[in-house]
Length: 244
Image 1 (cartoon, rainbow, N blue to C red):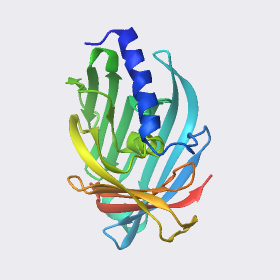
Image 2: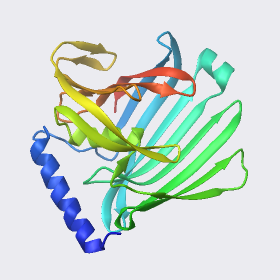
Image 3: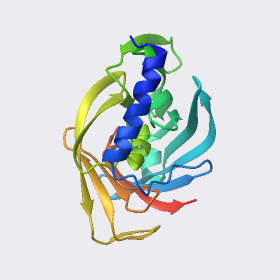
């Protein structure tokens, strides 16, 4: 259990430390109104979905400045007719530490709908998860926190600020579980051509255990350019097509 004063002091020290060890000298934080649009390729062959990640507002949560991020992935074309897949997520992120305070997540497809809301209480080392399926009863679970955690959406924002070459570790939340995962960050200097432009320098973040790859732009904003992972509709590769 943490005392609030100690918790905030430790948070400040961690933030200062990561800014020293990471390649963050040119970092530009996400702004309200930022919108990243992706085309999602399923199983390396089919345009299966469109995804939008948007910073919708700033605010305060537990006396901490925050931003609210919304992500929508909606299947299209043949994939939509087969799976009827749609995934939405809303995250309240700590503006300084870029870890989630609240996650609201919903997945719907031809088999039904799953919803969850996870509220993180870092000072007391616990999170509360409320889960329901197909509109049924709500299941409440208390999850012990080993420290600050990320999920796949919040991780993209965390990495934009905390780029440290070599091997790194993070606690990753997914489906009611938290696991420590390792990932390797390498800097790549070769052209990457996308619909949104050409990038001469970028960073590759790779986790072999969960087969997650994220490419971050070498620009000060460090936009996620490509996100490769697995989902219910198969292996997906989201490529950035527009920045607004």
